[in-house]
Length: 483
Image (cartoon, rainbow, N blue to C red):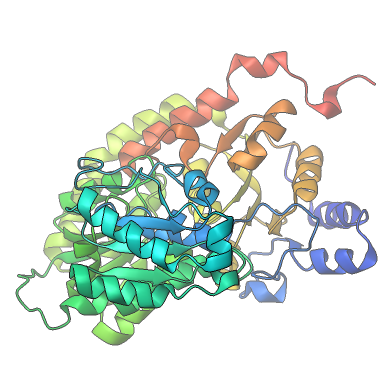
């Protein structure tokens, strides 16, 4: 199906909204729009970062997910306590596939679940003493840990436990950073507040630790790689390119990262930011306090990779500019071969995206390199500045949807009839049962990396494997079935 005309897309939105009561319909109408690339600010056509309407089955996560699951959890040499009932810690353990090197249980702890396992008695009498005992036990069992974060779950905030005093006491006793985070799931409207809480904790408890330490020997080519969580090895694929062009990565946040790297980041010459939504707060703080400039980059697909490498190189001297061109040239023939192989099989296919972080805009270029077209995109927890960046990447009259409900997304897919849907695990099996090819774009459907030149070859293979899988011939989408 060709992309809809503007009038058709606007009519579709109104048709989908008709099912709601008047109040809910007015609220949801603010979060759905038809893209206009000429609009300078998304707030003129779309509302975001607002509370979800109760009962509409939002796909969002919570503040705990944003702090523990996204920002702090991948820091590999720290122990991250899920302070509360066991479920939150278990659900968030290793699900995002934040790859790391090291010996798990010895000097790295990323895939382990540390929980205070709240019971009814802890709700009644409080969990501070239990938390203290837990930290003491962890220091005995895992002495090589470099610090501890306390990630609060909902009950902790409801009963008013004083986790800050516990953290302060244990920091003094262990001579390691023990950081308390008030990231209870009920805070805020989505996981986005969890990112902000996590950023603030790093700002206050981690970055100042080396402010007066001048022993680090810097070079003119030091960069910090932030906002990359190494899902499926993404950060490794990105780091290779930066080092090949002559830069030195002195800090990698937070996938395969260490607390020492967090502390070193302000000593870089440039901060390279991948996931703007989850790390822009720290990027701005380091710019204000340390004078560290930052830029957002995109390593999805050869077109955007080359564009980003050149923008990064422009911040340095001719040596790095020449290095960037050398890297682009090195991989050009390989990328041409990948596109020659897969583009004829994917050309003209329509894609709808609904993901978090940066993906709804960053992956557009990779799909376009394969001749595919994005006909709809939206974010789970975006702010208006995310949509400001997105409307320029999207085509005219394509659908934009913020915090889309399960019902809305299904109805849009039924009417737009994309060849591929890219979203999360909660949506995956719904659309597959409808006979629609689907990729889980939060953690690359257990594949990856998708970043960098190496990642694009895997990305192209995965899209082809999904779309051209013979299994879809055995299924019929609901609108294709004979009544």
